[in-house]
Length: 111
Image (cartoon, rainbow, N blue to C red; front, side, top):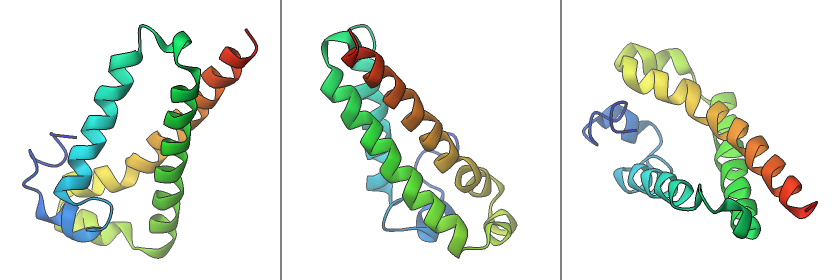
């Protein structure tokens, strides 16, 4: 996140989707990452939090899918390569993690 946002100085990244990817939004993505790390060794004790992580990832995945369907990604690449990479992959990454967290939650409920 820090690399692609150029340490929160990439105006193309934030101007492209200021509702979700403002500097505040980018900071919150980092905070979510820290939350994942904070329970990584004890995830089996917090199965409902794992479900919250899955829901959060699904929401970002849906927002990204909607954004991709309604915007021209090549225009972002033309303005800033790093922002283009970010918008190209962030939602796919979130959807993959949605499936991962859903799978982990499922396994935890079967214990």
